[in-house]
Image (cartoon, rainbow, N blue to C red; front, side, top):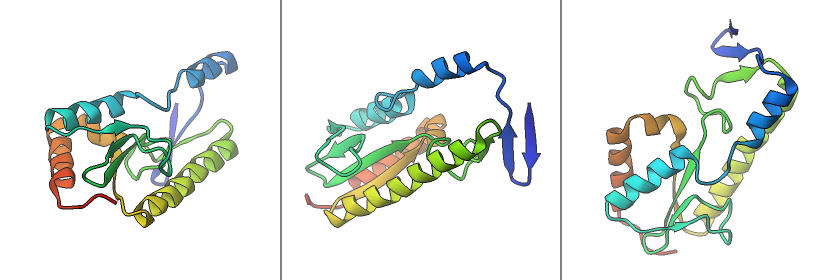
Length: 151
């Protein structure tokens, strides 16, 4: 059951601890559905890329070495996007989740700063953007076609 608190939606957990634990164990950090959508679109636009380069800060999801660009694909809930999906606050274990999500956002800011210091152009693609494929295609085309040299 959802409860409105100002602009935020607070959700009570309807699963048992065992069910929630199983669900959480199934959440992946790589090859997520939003990431696969972005990869597919970039490939169809004719761009080739490397995946999850661990030698770069934050291990970007897509790296375009010749273009000097990287794309990070972020889940709205996990990285506290300003959309309705990122505004949801769990009611169960609220302190833990607030700390976890805040630390994710702070780490994102640090890693994006480090990438930019190294000369990379960075685009963050939010999970909610993948729901409108045409608009996402335009965003990717604009980002990838803008001039930038290799870092």
